[in-house]
Length: 515
Image (cartoon, rainbow, N blue to C red; front, side):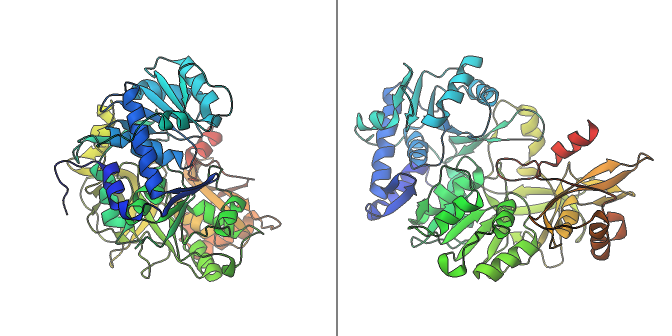
């Protein structure tokens, strides 16, 4: 597989779908947008950017809730040769002030509901933004802002796409670390194409008959693939939701007028839905497959979900740096509790502390090589050199591989615990605790005992109306895992700290212990 010397990813998607102009591409909270309308609006927006002085390769901030205006602005920017910087909608004004300065964005596309926090960010630091395009304004607009719909209506569609190459910078996503500032991860026009060709089409088997719905928002690498790259590469329809993906909000879409056939979620979301008293009946939904990523999916959750809906959850691991999933289970070939096997087109290595590959069954640091790798972290040569090494990308995850080639998650490199001189995966202990019928969620960290030795501590969220004691849970784990792994300390909590994608923030729990 190879691409021509001139390749613009937005034009590639538009060309694929010109034969289905009347078909619905997106359904959001306001209504439907056809494929023909998507191309028309995106190309008019491309013209609006250029008319406002945005130059080829200029960065433009994209701070929007999930609606059909998001792909219009993202694809319109690519079509014009600008570089959209898609950012998380749940951050603070300080975060956006940093991103505006760091990216050097010259324009911004923003949802009306998020305009106040962006204005606060612009007032905090230095930035180069000269124009705001506001989607669904909620109040009178400031002087340098235009209503997005008006800006689009005022232009003719841009006649031709920017003559970008597959290796040209196309867009940024910010990768958040548990420490330090977020990293501007730069992707090319070719990278999303590779994720569709290697994963979206062959592994997920998406077709134009699918209706895709992603709980992960489009500013995440996972959500971008689920709700834009993959469905638009096959002519499918996408359901978008601006609000948070709570169980009730998700169920309303599953059982609504446009029933999704493929749902993309994360383990904490699936656990929350299964625990909900409003879980729909199997007959009320049209799901044929679900995908899970973000963190490893406990096998027990996947099995309960399949039992209820008759629908498999295909678990995989991806990253912002690789853009989408590179190790995955397959429909019809699912080994519960594992992340599956490498996606064809990607190479995987597990390395020990000496940098050499570890034997089968041993835990090692996960390295990936593949064609969708990011170019760099913008303006951060130290982190770039540390993560991207001679074609390989260091993921920061620990994994083991069995004799059949299936990979099992062992935690983040900075989450691994050494107990009695032996590495313990917090994830393994958490997954075991969650097998108990009274446990909704669990997170495990290291805590020093009175002798200064590291032992495991579990934070446990009980299911509503359920009770279980500390001693019962300790005994439950001891029966199932090696004795040194059971949590010596335990605390029952109402909720666990999480990222916007639902990943448990164990470092927050560690901070809490040291205060």
